[in-house]
Amino acid sequence: MTTTHTPSTSRLAVADLTEVRVREPGRIAAGWAARQRRPLVGDDGRMLLVAADHPARGALGVRGAGTAMASRSDLLARLVTALERPGVDGVLGTPDILDDLLLLGALDNKVVIGSMNRGGLQGASFELDDRFTAYTAAEIAARGIDGGKMLTRICLEDPGTAATLEASAQAVTQLADRGIMAMVEPFLSTREGGRVVNQLDPDSTIKSIHIAAGLGASSAHTWLKLPVVDDLERVMDATTLPTLLLGGDPQGDPHDTYASWGRALDLPAVRGLVVGRALLFPPDGDVAAAVDIAADLVHGSGVSA
Image (cartoon, rainbow, N blue to C red):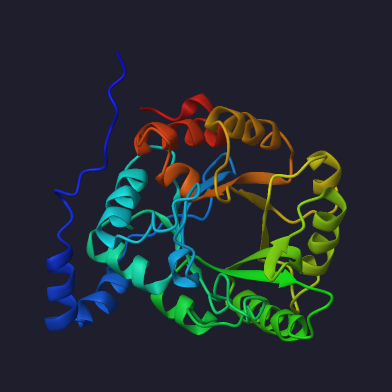
């Protein structure tokens, strides 16, 4: 008989977090200064990150449930559950979520990646304007955060793409100057029926890789965050940059998703996964079990339960 693990909120006190923010906001800066850090990658050179930067772009849906991520207390509980599992290296998030996790003591000895541009709100007329509205490179360095991530959607019919490319290039350069990872998430995108649609065919992905890889004055600290697409071996031959694969909004049978991740992780340039909704909101509600499967795929049988 399998027991389903439901994330517990007993260790989370959202009211306490609010009280700290009201009366002792300086504890956040002090917490970042005191945080115990770890190397970016371990001996196997691989990484599993949990993504939690969707809400800041107004993207709250999972599997058609439009407000699945609306509750901050529920999201934090799921994140804490995930970060406690062996083999989970860290988290990708916006300042509000990362500050909450910091106050909860969930970020010690974890890789922390700050999400930098959340201005292209889901469904907005300006969605392709991926301007930088969260972390700056200077703030990432000051807080001892391990990297900065930028969404870089490239729409050849939208003049605003030029500004997005310029801003991403500046962020890559500024992070590289400080010896900090720049995680670039590129897509070739179009507008179809008023919606922004990312082109997930192999050739479009390859083109986006080449554009993203050339951003900034140095590629020494650039990593890519890419979707799992068809013909991935040919796609990954387009770059020598280390790459983490994203999960996206999960669809279909999770076991099919896990199988596709497993095949992709065999490619030498693929160094791990950055997954949010597929792990935090599995169909059966068992966050720990979903995370454990991903950790085993990334790090192998050496991950202990």
